[in-house]
Image (cartoon, rainbow, N blue to C red; front, side, top):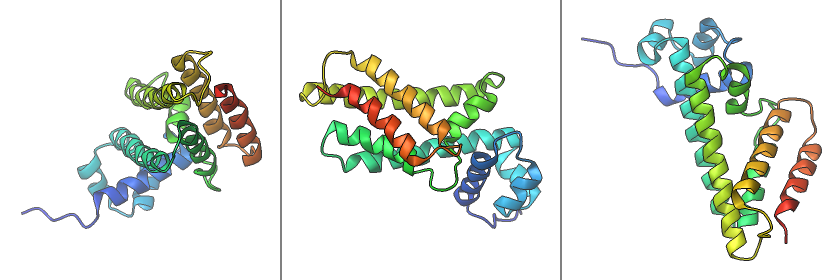
Length: 192
């Protein structure tokens, strides 16, 4: 009879996600993961497989985490503009003092060109964000909140590009004031 797990899988997966988020894939060793997750090496392998499989699961966990945060943040918005502002604020303020940036952006920069599975997951996340922005822009255009001078898809691509840059800059010493100025300038494109 096998032993029962002595840990909550989602808790240790979150710890793995945080370590990959902070250090990146290449810099994170299996020893780092065992120590940070607080589980035995054998349990890690039995539950999550190898480091690459664990990393892919951590990316999925991050996707769920971010989707829940985005849904929570935008559910309080009364307008499309508020929803988009909340998204930008989350990307700027949500990083806290960690300067970790975004796990998807970090992973795309580190691995996407040589790891098709990572590329697929990051691309899917980027497309999902673009579609969210496009839907919000269309809503704002339909209600007269936003200008109809530009196609919603093009505006969403431009705003998403700005979000990607902000998520990358959040990993540096760039000030939050600077990130907010960049966001405000890009959001001004939506105005009538």
